[in-house]
Image (tube, rainbow over all chains, first blue to last red; front, top):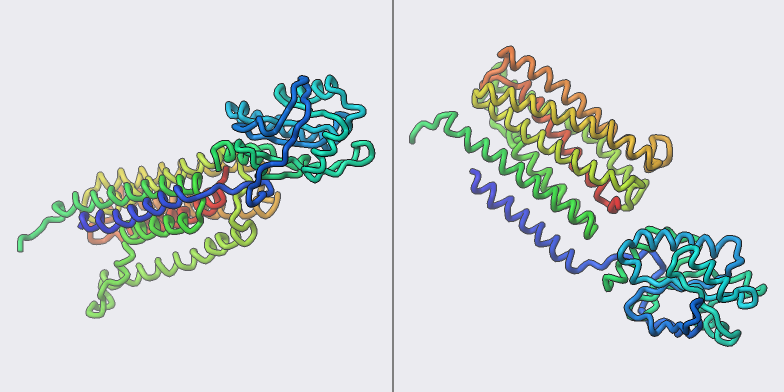
Length: 193
Length: 262
């Protein structure tokens, strides 16, 4: 009586375990951000960071880069986005060192390297501001489809996520992000999905 | 053929109860893994149905409904036992409608997404689910003991079931509900809140009535009212208790596993 019980239900259990194993091996996580598909190499960014070093997106391979466009005198959307990204970095724990957050200035007139550095690092020590000549910045805006008007005070607020291989993978609306969901997405990108 | 004693069959039946419980535990661990790491609803549903199948067949012995009774005199105990069984299962069927309605509402209102509970709830739920499954193990043990004249086994089994049932109630009302309210999920907050509290509340109420039923059966049992030949109240309480566990198998999956709580 018990042997039959074990054989029949044991086979059922084994089948379910097998199905679980197969599904686990095959499953791809879903992303909360807007997925860019197919993933293409992210447009180049060549600017100067707030430490005075030249910053090139191409040299960031191995890290997840979160690119935002804004300015330090921004009253709402930029600080909101940066504050939320600070929370995201906290949630990533040890993985935070694999993540680079940058903000390209939309207001090169008022944003000086020193001012940007103070503002960015005020949120998180590794956050970088990016500046450049008017031409360089225009190139970056154009490459990412960023609209900049009113001396930089009106700008599109997308957050662009580039994976460790340098591909543009996700976008979010910066101020609306859920820090935990961004952390989950970043974690999956770091894992190689 | 050699006459087999009741006591020869007993170890076999008891072992069966243990094996079924081990399967249930393994399936619960599997569905927890599936929920956290993969998330396919179809697989969660399949596991839930297998768990329910095990309980329905081995613990609730649903096949006894098929007992042959045409040759029986309608005035015998055996015949009345048969009709009592049918009556009980019809009652459980009717009770299924309210639980079924709530179950459907969860998906109608919230789709396949998670409830906005705190991540604590995931572990609280796993704990109380394990408690309830364990209580079904002891309930089965108590019934089997009664069927084979093992009075001590019967008393120990029922007492254990009652205690575990009470632990389940405390887990829901004192631990899980405050946690949910703390996370903003209240009976009047929104659709998610009303679904959560109605499902867990109606189920907990059935656990409570089950405990009361079992307490009465325990008291009667201690007075020697039941025998291996005549113990319908024990069987009825047993089937009712396992029914409440079956409902929870579906509710646990629907509330905590589908959509991945965290």
